[in-house]
Image 1: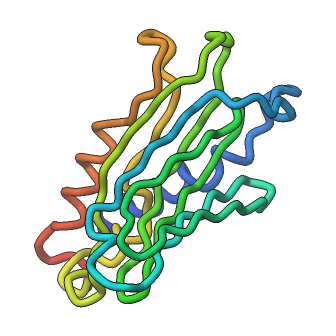
Image 2 (image 1 turned 60 degrees about the horizontal axis):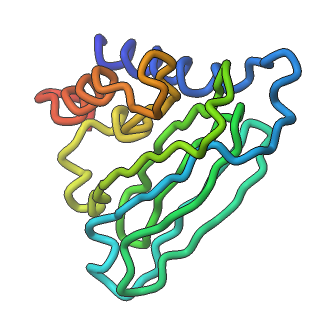
Amino acid sequence: MKGKIFTQLLALVCLFIPLKDKAGNRNDSTACLYLVGVIENATESADTCFIEFITPDMKIDTLFLKPGRKKFRCQLRKNEYYTVRISKKGYVPKLICINTEMLNDPGRLGWFEFETSLFKKETAEKLNKDALDFPVAIIYFDRQKETFAYNENYTKDLLKELYKPGSRQ
């Protein structure tokens, strides 16, 4: 029961926050974040790895990692919400939420780099199915540090749920 409540709460956070209007700031298309991602196991097979960037208004941009490649780079616009879906045949898709909302324009391009791996479908059978449906990270602009960061507590909690014994499987 607790796992189901946790799952529903996370769904509300990740799905409904992006729908909130930011009083006219949503139309600014200036790049503010240089995102670098490494998919550690993207080279395990000859299949293409896809990275999709989905905005609340369902605009989708897709990057393709050619076989043998595991690193991608892109620039994201400020004052936008993105759901990044990383997928590959034979693996469970992984989600990352990114909020590029910034109160003050720092006048420079921010930088965020991450590494991740995808779960093979066979491995995912042993994990909490509810937790697999949620983003593994929430990236945002930290106003105090004036840099992009991720919510470490959220990721830790999600990982606990993912590997929780007795979860719905």
